[in-house]
Image 1 (cartoon, rainbow, N blue to C red):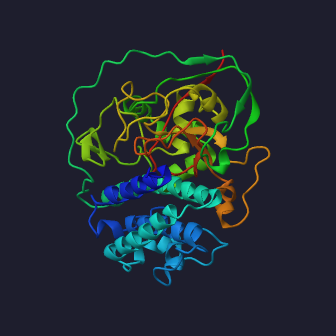
Image 2 (cartoon, one colour):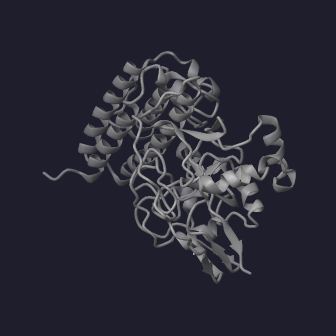
Image 3 (tube, rainbow, N blue to C red):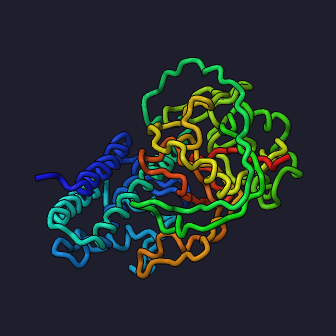
Length: 406
């Protein structure tokens, strides 16, 4: 009998989460280094709770593994019930890592039995949503673990130190010139997409140009050397206030030792490679750098129009490849756009708790495009809309510049 592709994908995605977590100790998996970070074991439990709550409930394979887990591992679904405060997840010493593993095993067994029973298309769609949701948490797991490991006076590595050859002598690439006009954006294919990618609609674009490569660490270090973090004329008002309040003087994970920049990575602390794309910068920093360069950030519509048709299926990597060695528009770092995260014309939230997945976050956030090196393979597409608040720096966020037509 042929294996159901959805069952095969379920096994693959669930196994991938456990493989990513296996490089972390039980102690690593319990720490919450700031309110936006969640402990690794919480990610593992929450993604399991999603299947138990939204897929298995009301079926012959439903049931509750442990009373109280719905309170501990609900993230933000008000329609499901109360939940443990997000900023205090690191205080949950119990359930421990081993019990979370048993929880995952129990739900996995029930899910596989459920998939073999031949569920209807509505339930299969919920399984597909749950798998993409878990892939999002795989990326969050690595982002959060990196921030946790960085807190130690002697930051620990997630993976063994890497050896890198010399940087390629990349040539100068010209910006892509676009004529503008009416463009359609939004998801237009079959298969899965998140609801915030719909509906497809038209936008008018003025002529513009967009750089083919991300901003490098070397280019960003020139901004720092030119006093970029001390020049209020380059910054949005909220950005300047944030820089002053938090004392930013470089991207997150950068540090200066004996006059030389170093950078913390999932491979440990390394000398800064000027050919690497700059990452872990906020929207404020990206915008200030663009002003310093006499450029701007692209809109999400501009980004999508140029990225459409390029290969989005790029290899997974713990850290981005060097500028010029990377896969183009996808798979190095999430790229800030100047577009506010808001609903597309005609957007409607789905009924019930699942409708809370994206719609209620469409305020006070900026759209990012393109995926990062730690984004799971086959998870990115031209229409994918990620979003974070303007001050966020712990995601793998980078910079691509756009220019008004001269």
